[in-house]
Image (cartoon, rainbow, N blue to C red; front, side, top):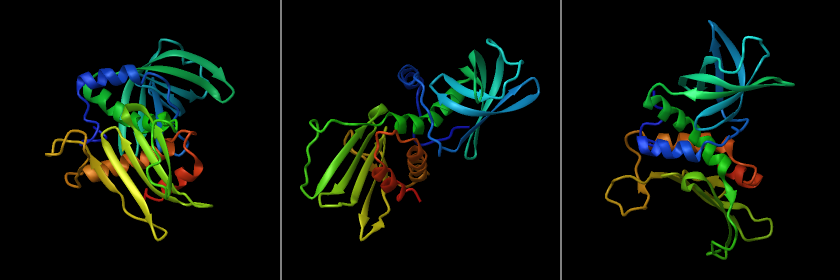
Length: 249
């Protein structure tokens, strides 16, 4: 059931912290391939996801008198080959031009389902929470490049470097996504493969990234990177977005 088996292996205490920190509404990017359906009384309803939080989902559904506050139904979330079916309660509803907005409170019957849902939420949270860091806290440490830094939820940190020349091109990036890390550099106009790392027990000093490609870790971090890109906040400039996309193949 879990979307990630090597990363985001949250323990119960960590999940409780995430619930509190990530209970605001996050809007998934239009390119994020998350789909949903609602099931009630033997029928399924096509819906459009408006927003998500650690314990709720906002959906747009075609107007139907069957929906009312307090009603219990099931939501199916589909991301790639992953499917989650979660019981939900209609906390509130509001007619809109596009249909009926349902604000759903999620009911997790088991811990693993809740953990899986929070794993699904992380690419959205990481991307949407990124904000530019003020220039004062960091140093332009290499005169050849102009560094931009964006900081987000869960110690997420994106650093992008651009050549310090007229019409300078993007040069490299480093992206810490919670405990996972990736980086890339342009070499002769080509996007060089990026390193994928994680901070885990492996003999390294605390806080140091550990390079590892075994056991599916490499592909999980790559997938996290791919899913985070369409969720980047408007604070990340278009040239940085386009540069990162070159490494998502």
